[in-house]
Amino acid sequence: MPPQKNIYPKVTITDVLREYFHVAKNYKWTIALATVSIIISVIAGGIVVPLYYKQLFDILASGIAPALASVSLVHTILVILGLNFIGWLFYRINQFAVVHYQAGTMNLLRQNGYEYVLGHSYSFFSNTFGGSLVQRINRFMRSFERVTDRFFGEIVPILTRVTGICIVLWYTEHIFTLAIIVWMIIFFVMSVFFSRWKLPYDIKSAELESRATAVLADSISNHNTIQLFNRHSHEFDLFGLANSEHTSAMKKKWTMANIIDGIQALMNIALEFLIFYVAIHYWGLGMITIGMFVLIQMYIIGLMNSFWGWSRILRDLYEGFADAKEMVEIIKLEHGIKDSVNAKPLVISKGEIVLKDVYFHFNESSEVLDGINLDIKAGERVALIGPSGAGKSTLVRLLLRLYDVQGGSITIDGNDIKDVTQGSLRESISFVPQDPILFHRSLKDNIKYGRTDATDEQVIEAAKLAHCHEFITALPLAYETFVGERGIKLSGGERQRVAIARAILKNAPVLILDEATSSLDSHSEILIQEALENLMKGKTVMVIAHRLSTIRKMNRIVVLDHGKIIEEGSHEKLLENKEGLYTKLWSLQSHGFIKS
Image 1 (cartoon, rainbow, N blue to C red):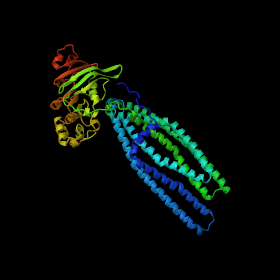
Image 2: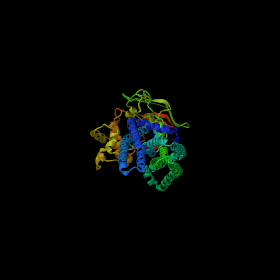
Image 3: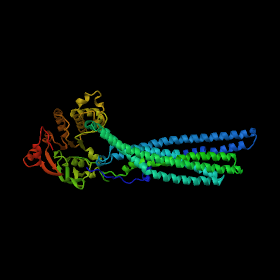
Image 4: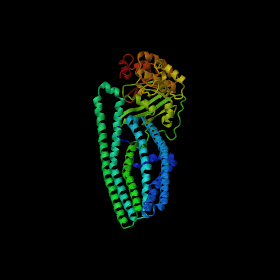
């Protein structure tokens, strides 16, 4: 299959926020509580408390006798204590609310992202690194944490503090409020400008991190091949290149962040100097009190701390967008294979499969299946034979709707498979692949994957029929033994027998075997033939096979070449055609195999 072009839709910040909101709305009341509580906390501790400190210093500077002033001072301190307690209380309420909704939303984001990714087609996964997908899902979840931490920890407090300070100072001296507003506008515009300037570098860094992770995951999952071909240095170079590109992008991103921090630090220094210069001038003219001077100082220090964080907030928001962007691209990408609007569950009563004028290609210059017409009767056993690339596996994938036909139709018992749900279609078909991949779970769990509600007794019975009970019980943990990633702890033949046991347990009316005995030695194959015979009874069977022991038991053999059916019939009938492809393949047989 040719490399897949970039098929992802364009994603904006609005798209990312929409995905956040779609999930976060499940916690709207908790979010409202978190917002209100942080506003009250900031007003109490950051706006009102400095007013009482102003009153405190005005009393101290008033010249009133200490004995008379002490009562007012104590009263003021108690009010400050009470306000700080209110600020503390509502801040704690905010934190508990944030924990509740943030953890729940992150869980749903990861769950929904995982569910949507699994809904993508076989083609999507064929062209996408698994490690990259894991990275994208996790970064999407963490980006929400970053954004909401900044919202409740920085944005709401800053907006509340700025609004409150401007209101208070407006009723004292307009010039202070005007200076803060002008400075704030300049600061905000510059922050947005610099953050947008830096955004492409954030996105590039995220993309290169995904690429480096994909290369790393690909190498680790194929470590055995690396060892066998002694290609350690080659893989080191590949990962080193990907890692270096990510490091270079990360350096650029961090360097730009330092430049932005430096400029905004100078702006903070300028505002602080300007405000205090004016305040000293007004104090010298007797226009403001010592208490007012203290109030301005507390407000300015609070603003400096807030706006110092503002630049980092914007950077984190944009970096959060960059982290989420790749996953939102996948979410916005429509599933390649979808159930129709009126799709109904497939109920198989007989198991007749009809392929009518089926066409399929991966690209316009290469026909994989070219007008296939095939009628498989209920309960019939059909073998698909042909050289590599003839279209055998593609035909099976079309039947399973891993791909959709591009012309013609496939029906089961008269039902077009495009008109039934994918879930019911695949529940009705047992598929044993040539190279079965197992989960890194127990042997019992892997066999039960054929029918998750099966009892332990049914699992053991299926294992006995597949002749894997013997080697399983010889293991120290028997059916509780974990098989390793992709089943690596088992031999090829053992994995094959576990896959057959899974199919036996599923007991679907349609059975597909993709060279199901290819990984078995002669002794194991003899053991499994009886199990396969029992498994095939009463089922419609399609077999992709080269072993004669499997082929000769089929009711019909269909020979494919270059995407077309060129011969079909029984073994004996096909051999009558001395010039036929089947006869040529038969003549190349050796010890029960057909070489192609």
